Image (cartoon, rainbow, N blue to C red; front, side):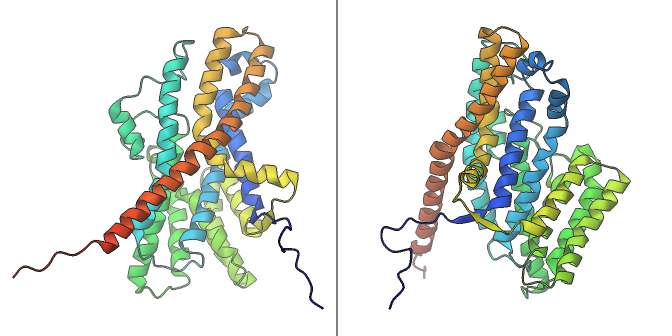
Length: 382
């Protein structure tokens, strides 16, 4: 007698398992970033602050360190995609860097243009320091190259610095893997890259991260990113427990040393997130329950929410400043409207901008690659 599998025709398809903890952390961090910018920028928070002053002060100040969650997760997922086992070597570094650029830059530029238009629109309804000056062509060009911070241009949108730093960190990691492969003769030595990354974490946390002059460069943030890299490698289930703990301690000891040298809450949070990912980050959870479905959905759109929330919050601030009473209850309602509108705009941006742009850029790159492979070579001249 044959047993009929539940995957037969007509049976409901199970959703793919996803990294539940990572999506939970991304979803939560994205909300804190939106609320931080709402509390820090715009006149609504100035009026609504009297309702919960301690909460507003915390959101305006401490909540900004939630970006460390994205930095650590960025390193964790970069290790997964670039070198899952932690071996040195990468065959096509420029191609990998190019793929990362076309993943980040097109939706970022779309959101930047929206922010530039939103600033012009908001300036008609209110006067406030959160409104940027009209964007120039050179400023937009620097944003398109993800060099706005390095070249000293003011960001058109809050959080724009993070996209550039993410790209720098990824490119730096690709080049370190490539160089490691060249040095080791592509023999894939097990401990080479963990030692390189641990050294980078040490330099970052004990030197570069202590000097704000470096905050437009990857070296300033490599401590947090490197903690994520080491968390992925150390959590490899094929490693013996002692080896895994030793590998994780190679990154945590510099973090502890850096905190003893100068306590930084952002680095403490990064270390905690790395430990959590080390213990539970690889566990996958199917989106078969309403709560997890919502968490996975918020995690999936977190980058779009991060990109688009500032112009949305700016326009809601301007609208409530122009048309609503300057009373705490009304302005607090405006903040709730801005928050919910940011989530809705993030979902729309993900569906109609981020995903289509990704498909388009992938199609273009693939076509160019095929054309390059099949390009007829010129006949030799005699």
